[in-house]
Length: 402
Image (tube, rainbow, N blue to C red; front, side):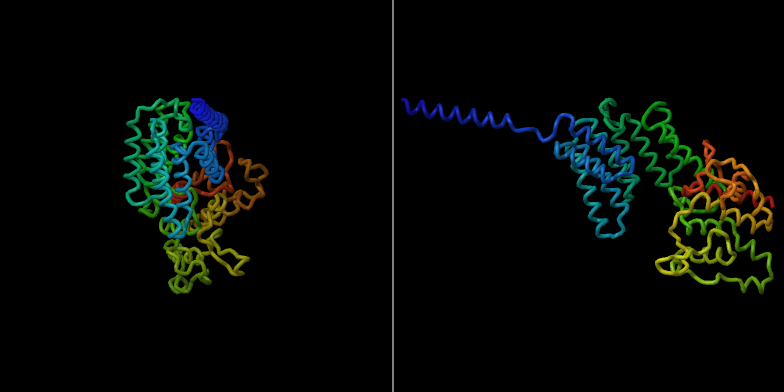
């Protein structure tokens, strides 16, 4: 009897020890270091363009709770950005598979409306970044499904409002060159609430789409031009194509000189980086007419003059180039020196001594290019596609009066 009691006592003691051991196991993360907070911080880093920091936060969230759906949604967006930046087809395919895997996990683990909202937002954003087959229709499907959710907006820790889906679908429509639908979606965000998180971004999106639609009116740019319209930056090759195809500079200039001289006039050489380029003829035409700002540049690495077709065009460079086009087409040489000697500049970021000053003044006084509400011209900022198209369109209209 005593032996049986001893065995029972030992079992009870072992059980107590086991329970005691379980009680002393510390959780992986402290209450302050929780998955939701890590996710929100990661999304903020993502918006700021710090993908590495964002990924670290999402991974930390999953370390704290490997079942946390929204962190997988965040990782899907990060991976889609890597997919977009990747040029190697094999590596690109790997990143694409990872995006799908993360989205599948986010969908499977989403057991609350707010997590399902995060998932649908991630689908729209990854589709927009990756642009795979039928991406716009797939994004629209996610938008419609997400819009049907009955979600308490107070639980949307990062997005903070259901209109976020409309904003990102507006971005998708803009990227898909469906400009009227994009404008409608941005308008719906603006009408949703004035103090919402996405109001300012939607306002910028609406103004951008409005600028694009105004720019495209009266131009013959086609699908290539529409593609340029959505870009954050345009390249030297893009601008060369627009100038030649829209302003017809070669036709105008050729009509002013005898046929023999016209046939003899050619670009001095073909830059090595333009051989086989789709805009080779346009670039050589600008070189033939010596358009200032579109000359080849000396490259220290190759020790050769290259056109550098993929280099972005700054607003100052754009002003200089269009000023020279204006001078050449009108034949009015005074334009190139009209504002020399001025002591005060209307722009805080462009001094009268700047090499761009005369060109900036010519462009802004003719309403070909615009300054910011702050008064700055943003001389060193890259020209976006909508700005370039609008400037070309206005210049084209101005030239009809000469």
